[in-house]
Image (cartoon, rainbow, N blue to C red; front, side, top):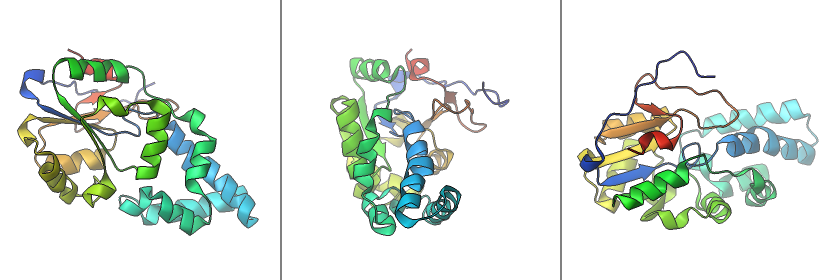
Length: 226
C-alpha cells in the first residue's frame, strides 16, 4: 500500500552521470533491522538492565534519541554504549540475521559497474555498524570507496558534509546522482548543488511505501536500470 502522494518518476540519462552516491540503511539495506533494534530490542534490554517497565524504557530512550538526531552522536555506537551502559555492537551482532539487502540492489550495482560509473557508499552509520553490515551482506567490493560521516566530520543532513565529500572524492556535482531514503539528507545535498537526487520510498519492508512530494522516488532499484 502506498500513500496518496503521486510518484515523481526519475528522469535523467546515465550518459550525464559519472558518480553515484548511495546511502546504506533504508536505501540498500532494509531499515527494519535498525527500526527494530533501536525501537524495540535496545529498549527491552535497557529495561531488563535497569529494572524499568518496557514502556518507561521506550519513552526514556526515544527522548535521548531525539536529542542527538541528525548529529554524529546519533549513529555513534561507542556513544550509545557509554550512555546506556550496554555493549551496543554486541547487541547488533545478536540479531544480525535481520540485516537484509533490499530486492534488486545487486542487480543495480552490477548495472552501474557494467556502464562504468564510480559508485560510492556514503553513510551516516558508525564504522562499527558498517563493519557488521558489510560482513553480513558482502556488499563492500561493489564500491569504489566507502565513506562514513564520522570520516567526513559532519552528518549528511548538514551542508558541510557535501562540501567536504566533494573535496574527498573530486566529483562533479552536475554529473552526480545520490540515492537516499531521508528527505533531510536529500534537501541538504540539493542545497549543496548535487543535481540528480533519488528518494527511496520503501526504506523498510514492514512499512508502507511513501513517495516524496519533492524528489523523484523509487520503490526498488530496478526502476533505475535503463
